[in-house]
Image 1: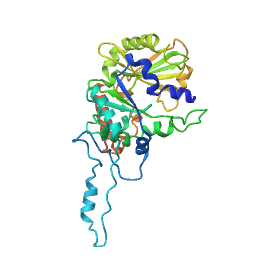
Image 2: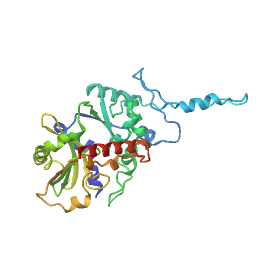
Image 3: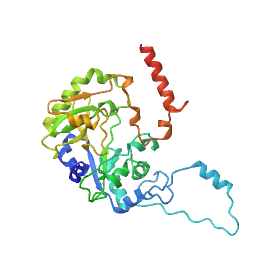
Image 4: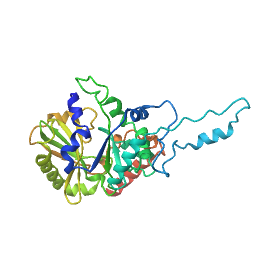
Length: 327
């Protein structure tokens, strides 16, 4: 994989070409001071101070245990309490973001050049990527391991790597649609400019509706690729994500590199490499037995703890019970 291939998949590069076929988005080039803030882990977790919203989130992430420790600790007469560090402030960026969010309907989901902070949704009060202000965006970004890929590791898989990071970082504010269904998002794999594989994007859940709609969805996505993507996107080998609306329209969600940090989900890269022209396969989770919980990454320990009594232990026991009832 070459650096050029990675750069082609940055949203600020592909969005203008697919503007009418994707989610409405506002792009903002980020100042270097904000990038340093995202990477800084030397002090307390502070959120940007707000100049536009009196009801903004608190500047510091709340930790009740720290309050208890502070109550138990008494300063001596000779000691003084050091002043807290000032919260970071990005007034110009905040105003630009506020205007864009309002133009997009009041709620957005954010991403950087390549990645969205999906692994940090658990920390949001809404348990989603929905944001209404800079502080909420910063909370997701500072809590996301996935964003480190964009910030520090975007070119790690490149054979001609000369860069440690892109020339510029962009914040993409994408219109929030609360009614989107995860079962209608799919990952598509293109090899030698031919569509060779498609699978559901959310592989940790069995969706019965996909079993009945499989052939229809395959046809819609295949037609969309050859009519709208094949002769527009500049690479021969890549992956891209799409969403199929209830009106049976296909929308581009994102573009990703072939191999590298892109997950092949229900395939392996080795079998995708072996596929030739005319060998398109459409894969879905056909039953509860086919879910792939191992692909949940960078989430709280409760999500991956498999010990007796853990969350996953209870989920698996319930799934086994349902399977026994089905049989």
